[in-house]
Length: 428
Ligand code: SF4
Ligand code: SF4
Image 1 (cartoon, rainbow, N blue to C red):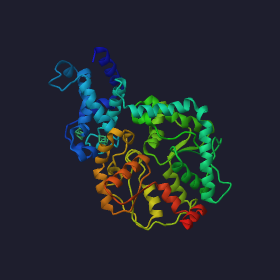
Image 2: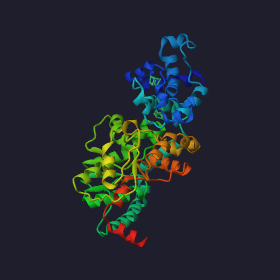
Image 3: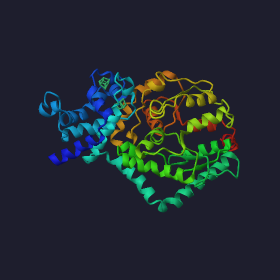
Image 4: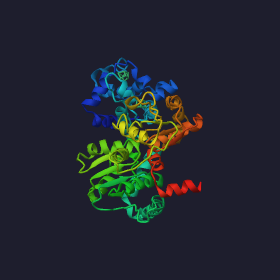
């Protein structure tokens, strides 16, 4: 690597440097408490995945270029150039990280390794070493918004098909999936596919909500890729839509990272305060059930457990609402141990489910989740994040867990008195 390339990469680190990052890079005591917190290290015993070791690679560049001791006696202070070997190690440890921040929770100094690794991703991208698949998915989302006229008709026609299913499910020929509705209370931002739209539409219909469906999906591969500019542009698509329509709140579907991007990062990236609230769909459903707007029965009589997605629970602060919803639907709720802030990551976050070469590693890293699920004896495991569900479905298959992995909205629909559901049950 020539000096110009090194200057480019250290320039990225310099641009990202602030007091907090400097503190994270200066204070690690190498106590290795974080090793027992990371599901990937615990499952593999491989030092590549030890949280402090991952951060150490950035720390080595920092020592060489940002400290006098590292600059003059690099061997003594473990200072290194960002050469190809270091970048190889950095790529493997960084794009494997799910960003669960369980290591931070247990670190005595609260060092945010996932944050340090977000800087690592920026360095890898500047070196042309960002993950290709995540980069392509991010670019495809941006292309869609830049050329929206090309896609509009096909998107609206897809919504009309789902609307036909909604009429059948609710037994109401006037039930609709509104789009572009100015002055609606809620802009609902789903994932791509009917599974994320139909149950929410039925819930909004039954609760009498004034809502409109976003033209854009909430998933944000720019965030997983590690490019804040791309991530902001992807989130801007529905944030600008919310401003244009004048809604009171943006409600994010059952997705972990999209909720965190919308609720926490987007204001920081734009430097502007949202003129609306941002909530997760489970906060809304919990409110509807508690204030009586949504009638559900306790119809599930097999044991149900709940997995806190890291970006909804530990990093998003939503713990009780999903549990209250599940308790309203099921007679036998069994929490995992540990749970809430201490919940084990399932292994499916950080965009890793989209990186096929990491499939075997990803499933291996779910060892703690498998143990937790088995210990509950549950027959259904509910979780409000598609990546978590994909990972747990994989674990269910490979480990023969014999459970059903379910979205919470699907369980809500099953416990609502909907004519279409009854007909389907009678016909079965
Ligand atoms: S727990 Fe914190 S201080 Fe200890 S090694 Fe890990 S990152 Fe460093
Ligand atoms: S954020 Fe999660 S996956 Fe990443 S190093 Fe920490 S514990 Fe491991």
